[in-house]
Length: 365
Ligand SMILES: Cc1ncc(COP(=O)(O)O)c(C=O)c1O
Image 1 (cartoon, rainbow, N blue to C red):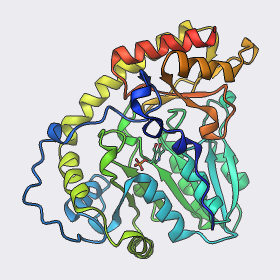
Image 2 (cartoon, helix red, strand yellow; image 1 turned 90 degrees about the vertical axis):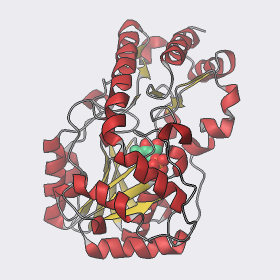
Image 3 (cartoon, helix red, strand yellow; image 1 turned 30 degrees about the vertical axis):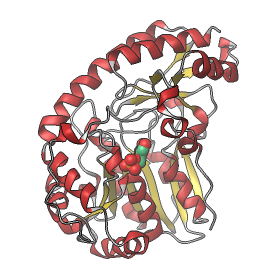
Image 4 (cartoon, rainbow, N blue to C red; image 1 turned 180 degrees about the vertical axis):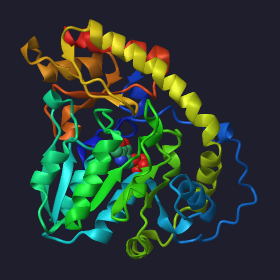
């Protein structure tokens, strides 16, 4: 089994060096917070191995929201690790898998690495990047092991309706396939958040983390939630192979941050709403771009109009080198580079303003 390096990670801003970036529009999260802001005192925390499933109090908190129990939640080192462990627990070479594209790269790469037969469910700009249950039905086979979607979606920010998710859950239930919903951006829905995926059926798996809405990706804390004891046991087997248990420090901080979510999330939403309005005005006034307006998350995925005659390589060179502004180019998501992702939750209002102006200038360079 060989692991290729994913360009979204190889070209990530932390790999490039933050000091080279004036306006960072690559991030898909709210601004990072410091330990001081969280005001958590860990001085007396015993640095011991911890519960292999993860901090029981945090698992209980996460589960309660879904009317589940702590036994239905396993903590992992971020949603990325949760996705990897889910794939390792469920999939074998040759298994048939349906995965939405574009997507956060791990969702597509891990089944490929495991040599599954991957059918890509291509989400198209012209169809509003919408998940179409009819197309899932058409791709589904009696032996399909897994259908994998992301809601709200990265990189487009498009949020499926509850009816759509329910339909996917019903369709997969008919053949015995599992439905995996990467709900890492769920807490950043503009409207009422979608229900946690694991509430949609025992064959539905939800994956999420504290990286995006809580602004603490550096503690590497996410989870898998499913109301299926056999799957949870399989996941535990995988996790123990990788690292026995999670980091007791990360889990203590995560517990503290999750317990304060009622305070943080509304604040984040207000910030995101203001930033989103700014981006929306800018796109409306920028004739060289078009987009599908997002319904959640903190990212959008505009594209350069096909008839604009823009040399995309020159656009990125100018944007990066002359303006110190970075966005997520289309190839991070297996899309042409005339698409790019803008993360508008992480920058300050001034940085966002600077970055949007830089994009307009680089398009005309
Ligand atoms: C949809 C989605 N899932 C999972 C992840 C992984 O995030 P983390 O491992 O920090 O929780 C990301 C990160 O960008 C993402 O966008």
